[in-house]
Each structure stands twice: as structure tokens, then as C-alpha cells.
Length: 187
Image (cartoon, rainbow, N blue to C red; front, side):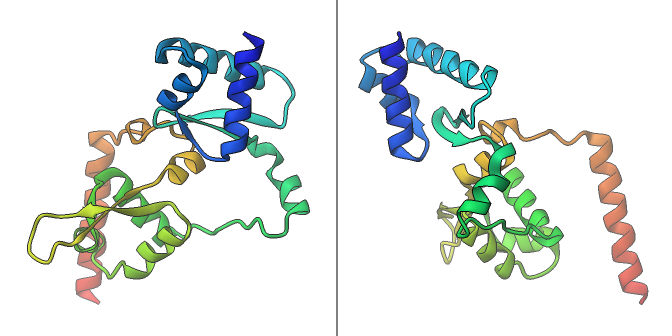
């Protein structure tokens, strides 16, 4: 078992990105169910020990990462590491994309009520959003969705893990938006 865990560690460390469960299973010559058990054991092992690294699951893929509590120390050594700022506008745009994906720019702008080109481009620069294809409609507009980097940064295994918005909260938000629109029209 130790040798298989060592092989998995070597694979995840050397790849530096998320590796699909299927590929790991092929490499260690085990079925996916057994491989997942080994990975979960390895993940628990890293989490229970005082280690600087961990293994995370993202969309049925696995990646070796540094633990978030050590980011500031890494940043001191690596000046290239930069924090990006997610403004309210970027968070709003990102939320719309995350919950409505795949979605076009015009659909995002329809929801937000303002141009979203800058926000979308910034989210693409941050690798939180990417092109997911084209809509089968006149002009074939680009469809946007979230990336594995989005899942990694926000701690989700998949977009299915996004928190659900309760109907009551949604109604409150809609009333607030209507109120803001009325205020703007009266100005």
C-alpha cells in the first residue's frame, strides 16, 4: 500500500495540476473504486498530520496543493505569487456565470443591466472563467463557464457543490433589485 501511495504522490506532485481519477487508476493498475479509496486514505493522512501540503478533489480529479494557511509564507519567498482582487462587480459577474453556466455575455449583461465585457475579461485573466463553446444561435455567441481554478480557489469539488439559494432569499433579492431600479428611475 505504501508503494502505491508513493506512486500517487509522485504523479500528483509531478503533474502540478488536477489529474483525473481514471488516469491515476490506470497508472497504478487498479479499478477506480479502489483508487478512490486509496486517494481518500492519502487525503485523510495529509489532513491529520501537520503537513504543508494536501490533496484536493476537483471534478473527479485530484491535485496536490499547499495548504491555504501557508500561502503568506509562500508569497514571501515567491514575489511572483499575486493575490487578485475580486471586487463586488467581479464577484457578481462570477456568481452569475457559476450559477447559470454555460451562459453568454449578453445573458450576463441582461441579468446585470450593464456591460460586462471588462468583468468577463478580468475573470478570464484570473483563470476563474473560460470559454465553454458556442451557442447554436445566430452569431454563435461564446458560452462562458467556470474553471477548475474557480473550484480550487473557492473550495468546491464540482459546481454541484455551490450553495443553493433559498426561495425566500431569492424573493428578498428580487425585491431589493426592483427597489433599486425604481430609485434610479426617479432620479
